[in-house]
Amino acid sequence: MIRALLLGIYYALMIPIVAIIGFPWTFVSGRVDRLYQMAMAVTFSGMRLIGVEVDVIGREKFDPNGTYIYMCNHVSNLDPPIVVPSIPKRTSVMVKKELFRIPLLSKAMLLASFVPVDRANRDAAIASIESAVSVLKEGVNITIFPEGTRSPDGKLLPFKKGPFHLAFESKAPIVPMTIYGTEKLMSKGSMKIKGGRATLVFHSPILPADYENRDELMAAVRAQIADGLPAELR
Image (cartoon, rainbow, N blue to C red):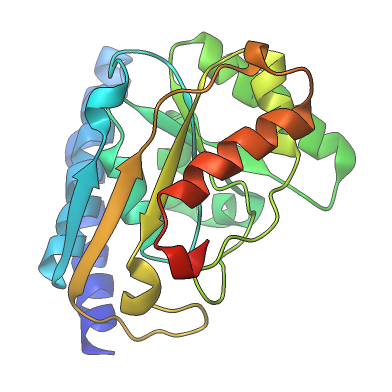
């Protein structure tokens, strides 16, 4: 619990500082890049502060200046603050709409072109995909956890179909990602964080145009993500 408390205090102190410095620059310049870079630096440094080390593998497999849909498995609450800052260039994230109710956080997410998702409302879900397509057309990446929730034991869960509908609509290449180790550092349902090492693997891009339908594309992405996992988690 000490690490979780330390991380919460650190973020509570740093987020207002980032906002005070970054928001005026963003409003004056009309650009969110500096605010985003500051936020990612604070987010990732929080992981280092609590003793979480990350091995990143495979970033040489794709053009870091390209625009992609990044898809990653999800095993812990530690995944987003590791995955998102590790992605080259700015990325949007499809996040639960409830997070947009937090005043300062919602403003930052809107500036960063994050896309709210309401899975209980079909029309809203379709609107989210349309918003995500627009973000990709602006040259901003999208990051998605296609399982839709955290795995309780680190093993892959079934994938949601929405992200693959987005891939076909946008025609954007997918970069599959595999994360593991975080399930041991902070398991689902626990507030306890352990220090230790996690691994994040970037795989080669997959082109939606190479597949006839959504199910084939989903199977290809799932196979790559699974291939990066230890045998016992596949």
